[in-house]
Image (tube, rainbow, N blue to C red):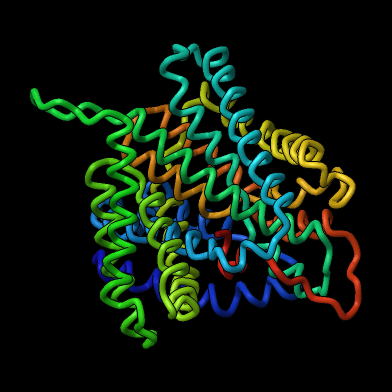
Length: 410
């Protein structure tokens, strides 16, 4: 089967799954997941059936970069300042503390695991452990929209919405800065840019892309023209970031944030981003599953450790953050349960890291991310439901930071 026909069939199946099967499961069974697409990718990949061969995976590398970049822009489009100022500041403080604490705790514990279990030197364990910290900090908001349909209006739901967006921002910024710090040296005798200069380059790619799009098409409202222009802008920004081995997520998140805060067609832009994101995410998850390679028996321990550490780190960090921000009495000590689901952002970060580093440790990170998504995503809506409590009739939540994506994660 040709690579073009393979992609066409996968995209067609993705549209069908995202718009029919997914909505049916989400509304009737409280199942909101992308895990099944990861599993499908594993079955279709070269390690099982071979329908998606290694050559096909290599050939569609640029498409996967665009999918990752589109994800960053969609996340960035949630940060509209005019809407964010209507949310109480204590919620932002709680959300930031939870995300930062989660990243720090998971990273620190995973450094210890890699050093003690695998015997990795501490300086070599910092980067993969911190990537796992970024992955662990990310949370899925896919279950929030399903639970919101049950007419709940509680402070915990508003905080969960804010925390989901903050988790994504902290994970993306942390991962982007990590790539700047650990950037490989260029060949030849040319002076390599410093980590600060790499960070400026990554931010400049997003800032310039957002401003240029705003100048040329800021007032455009036609969905078809916006889609073509957005696809071009995001392809350019994500491709440039990937070419210099930086994170496309960071650059395109800045583009999305700039556009929704500077253009009059912010609603149309957000609508285009969300319409395309579902099928793109499904294809990304399928190809990520196909790209997975089994880890050695010695790496099973760290993978299991990450899967076990993350829930305790998220719930403990959420409780401590609410206590420090004095919102614990408002949202309850178990509100962090709603953040246990992992979305496609975790897979995107792991896949992005694996494309830059093909070592055994990067495959361990990739495997840990896939294992966490497979084990938590199916229950993400139920986690939110457990944290929110029973429905209150006739009331719908308002004022959330992020609108909930429709397909398997962020």
